[in-house]
Amino acid sequence: MNKYFAENFSFTITVIDHAKDGKRLHCRNGHVVGDTYTCEYGCPMPVNGCGGFCSKTMINLYRLKEIIYARGDLRLLGFPNNTDIEFPCPDGVVWFRMQIHDLAEIRPLISEQLPDYADVIRKSFATVARDFGLTKENCPGHTSFITDARLKSKLKDGYYPFGLCIGDKIIGFASLTDMSNGTYEMNDVSVLPEYRHYGYGKKLLYFCKTKVKKLGGSKITIGIVEENTILKDWYTANGFVHTGTKKFDHMPFTVGFMEWSAKSNG
Image (spheres, helix red, strand yellow):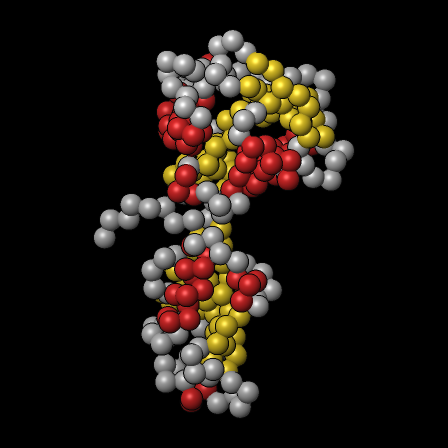
């Protein structure tokens, strides 16, 4: 087997109860309370010598896992959340608890991996370049064309780059630059297209907001393509306020400026 996709979720499944009559003999697979299994996309594997997972229950488990992988919302099925749920086997004999673990974590940039980070930024912003007709000819300075050397030139005091990673795979990026007087400029917020709509952009934003507060900062500023109304609305929904626009001769779009205040609730 040769995995080509870094799974961004893992699951822990534990037997927590039997039917109301408490007769575990009704479970053909012989599950007992405490049997525990883990998996990612594949089949659950035992972690405490409890034997194989019930093949019939895979019908229910597969459906629930696909909802998570398809960026769905388990709450629409009556579950209380998307991280820790309980469900029965198809016969209603055994009840399971499934804990859902997001494997993506944010780490400081490692200089040896700088080319990988630059590649993630380029691939992430390539969709922006495509949507707004940006090319190396009409907008060579756009983030979608960032070079390894350009990213490396930013590595200096007051620059805080972070990667969003699953194991050794980098799937996102964001950076903060100290602009003095408590203001930090946020740049290159990126998530690879295949990992979007899992809340990772919001995860990066929350991390940057928390980091600025820890650094004693009071404000985050950003610049975006003003015509990108979807992105502008997303930042607005996450606590940013539009502060103005500016047209630059060397850019085929209008730059929109937004900021977030550490005093806000967003």
